[in-house]
Image 1 (cartoon, rainbow, N blue to C red):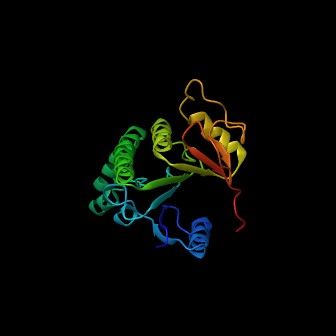
Image 2: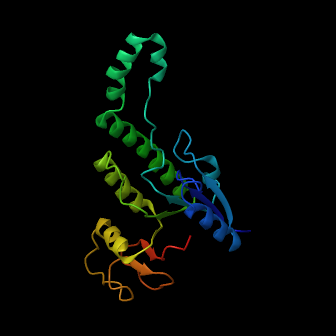
Image 3: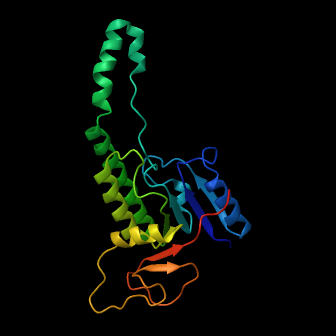
Length: 210
């Protein structure tokens, strides 16, 4: 039976060819690949729950709430436009955005933990350490740390990102030696085997050519 992989990406192939090329490559290698672009109410789609591996991309975009528009108030004329100018900034304030984002991440990470408890495996490709816009920075940083604690493996495209991920990993237990193959705790070049003191596999695989 082929390995069932659920690729979770809110970044569509129409905007970035990365996911489409990865999906094709995995399928060519013999995996059964399902692409999930929407998280659904619980954060983890049903199709992903049935997969052997959930492979997430761009945590900062997964479940990101759209701007809350009150454009419908414009039909009321000038009073409606005034209400819209008053209420829309409040509905989309940084504090409200961060609160909604934290609630979503709590749901999503709880769903991932339940998926893992049922025998699933979680892989995360770290493209960015946070949103480009810097919104809900502390919430995103906390979500990333919690995701890394859940992940069975992390994939990065370069050594500098591997070092940044390494800095977010829990401290190494006393008495454990550094991974001699990589020279850095938990960082594992593609194809590396042997002891991994951090318990988290971090694979460095260069970015493919578009």
